[in-house]
Length: 170
Image (tube, rainbow, N blue to C red; front, side, top):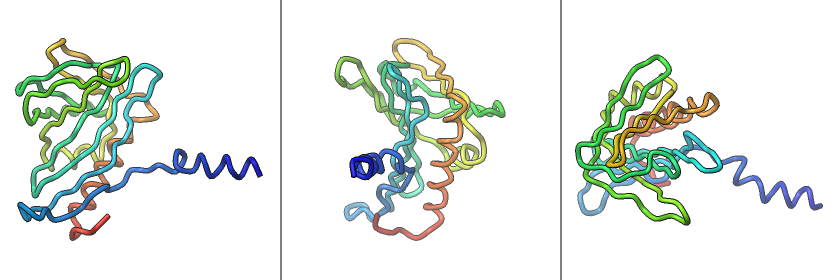
């Protein structure tokens, strides 16, 4: 009986998958909004990097979320570069200047960048090898572990599939 109880406790952690969190028409702007769940790109004891997407009409934004690695405020000109295993570089521009946030004992960030639909298409067919973040603290390369290199590819495919379907409630 204890084993069954443990199994039910672990199911949410084991079965977590990438999905669409919201797909709706904004009541104020009347534009379609899509938001995905976050996917982990680097999970470590002291370092984390994740990403998620949101759209408003045809504008696509990718958020880089992290702590313990590449922490720093960004200005409106501090780009990030996503490099695929095929050495394709995708440069993303911040939506605005953005600060770090306090989270427990370490600083964390959730910075949003504009990304083109064409670049999302590229990410949907190529594994991610590295993220280079430019911040007020300097430049940091974040290598993506082999077992996580397809995470953003899967999330990008999911977003593109959702963009090609009529809005639904999630």
